Figure (cartoon, rainbow, N blue to C red):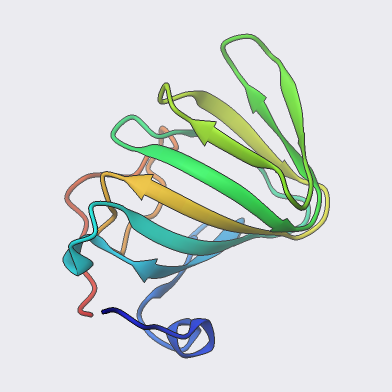
Amino acid sequence: MIVRDLTTANDSARRIVSPDGNWESTRMLLKSDGMGFSFHITTIYAGADFRMHYQHHLEAVYCISGEGEVETLANGKRYPIQPGTLYALDQHDRHILRAFTELKMACVFNPPLNGTEVHNAEGAYELDAAAIES
């Protein structure tokens, strides 16, 4: 059994802050945990507006708190995000995420992240990032 506390994880190498200052993510479960997915609690800072395209990963996102929107670039459709909203990037969707207020999100990635990933120039995570020790 794996048991982790968010407060403790926030004070460890599991908390990753984006170089561009748009978000931070505490990686609660990673590839090294052997679950077949990774699980993160991610904060998107108010005013963030950035493009992403997870070319190598599928992601499901559940909004815990805050308000924003996600826009699919294929058709320009915008979906409001508020507490209780889930969106799933099941087609490696190119998208824009906008945070009108600070967003707190629970995120699941498949395949699982290693731990130190941040977005590359295309807004994707690479598959070969360094692992965080459990």
